[in-house]
Image 1: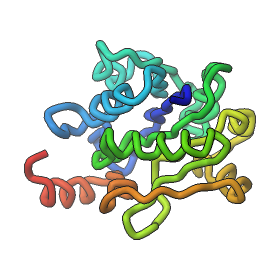
Image 2: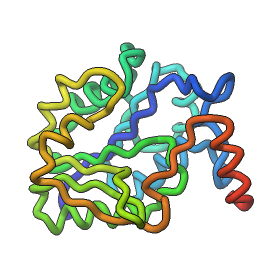
Image 3: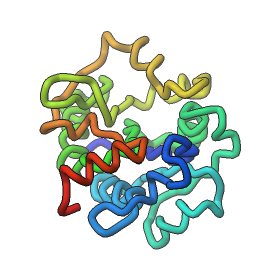
Image 4: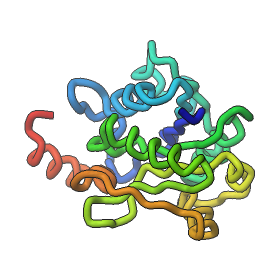
Length: 201
């Protein structure tokens, strides 16, 4: 299997949640961020989690997990700051990097393995983007290691969208069940609706 690194950007301010932190919301009995990290560790032994600071409450919910925590002092710059810092920490031995958003509770371990398998089947030469069952582009996204230098120049809050666009000629899309690749929970209203539809979680 290809040597890959999973990056979980978790340094954002969660401003749209008011006084709540979306990444600390309980899902399946654990804070969301911890659950995402556990699933990431199930498919790779190299997981990077970016955080606002080393002492942030999000760091506490990762206690005992073998993840690399990276503080992002310039997190106010947007998602790009997390990706820049994470890319700089990726090992030279890594052949691919998966960007796994921290606010997507429906992504399963099997979903991650499905994306990784598609990357592996393509010999690590192509980007792989998960989609909803209807083909709508979503997350996570796998990037070949040769694209890591491009992360250094990312700016703003658009993530790695510019890199995806510039390399669309080498992009593979893989459909995941339902809306697993699309459901992200950024507001109290989104959480209320999700909980109503998932009462057992």
